[in-house]
Length: 456
Ligand code: SAM
Ligand code: SF4
Ligand code: F3S
Image 1 (tube, rainbow, N blue to C red):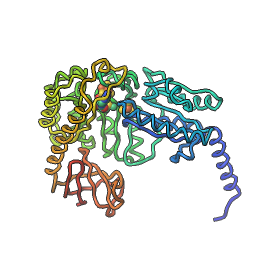
Image 2: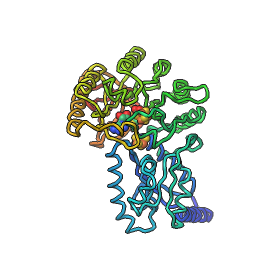
Image 3: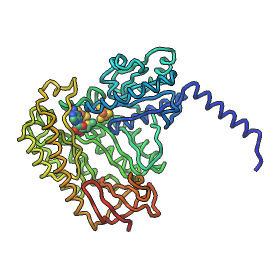
Image 4: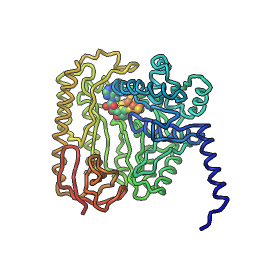
């Protein structure tokens, strides 16, 4: 085929567009820390920037703008950001036009003080102010510092289509903020009041993702159970999303034990494409500590929810979050946590050492469990959970499971990693299979974290 003059003109135009856009906006590199909601926010803010003449780059050395989208949940999360910022200082020296910005929960918590700590920092933006990023960057280019940290009662970024790198799975944030005010937790202060995104826009977005070939959708909120839009609750939304997405797997996180309804459990049971998996953080096995944590349930309530879930959905996988060393936690309280783990037989647990967060209610309590004891209790929790997970996994040897292949194995390109409906990680030999395939596997071997299988 001949080469038309128009093609040259078109390609020159495209080049010019590209160069002009880079001049107008620039190349943005975002590093994201923290929870899935923060990763989902990065997709939203990138979408806003791309609509305003910016480009994303995966190479930090190419960037004109570097953003750290940060987490404040524990002191350790913030310490990591402080040391990352120190390492970026050198880069800024060698490239003076570079803009460095701090976004997300830590920006919201520490606020303007970050400018005093890091004089080379140009911009600070909280989670509800991402629409202002293009304007803030422009003001930095005029020689000012950019700051926007107001929390909103209404912002849900409902009209923004996140900039996703089309893959096997996709997140949809269905709500923002949190009103639970667990006494240890900074999230209500960094993310503001709870608000739900509109029902129809979520279903529409899920349907589009299904049409684009996404195989798994994860609905996100700090407490999805309290989703409410007009007369619709989370169970209604879950069913509607499942109906709009063919055989796409639907997952959700996080559920709070306080308001997990029977209606929701029935919804999970009713649709094949809703994953039979529940992440239900309990935090402690002691009623005394749960009260101090402001969690609004007792261990009896929690066990009743677990029993109901298992009665309605016998195959359900259940994981939890646990904190060790909350103020006032005695050996007796810790033993109650071990007892609960033994009784419930969680599939897995995310475990944390209590970290005091300024501004929370628990911060006023004396952090009276010494670090060494917190660590000792944490390792007892981890060891017990590992033993339980291993026993649960051993029972799966010889069983058939369907997995969705998500990626290559971290260890070798000769193996693929997939997940069962109940969220168990399975490694299989690569064979002729591809990322995004659903395959049936037989489990051959297990350890406490992973299953190993072959395709049948
Ligand atoms: N909204 C979810 C919930 O209620 O379970 C998760 C919120 S938080 C981002 C994830 C987990 O971090 C919590 O479940 C809790 O176990 C842990 N966490 C939160 N604040 C903490 C703190 N100050 N110290 C240690 N762990 C904390
Ligand atoms: Fe934090 Fe509790 Fe809200 Fe979860 S429910 S984000 S732990 S305050
Ligand atoms: Fe961290 Fe904020 Fe998520 S504090 S855990 S990034 S909501």
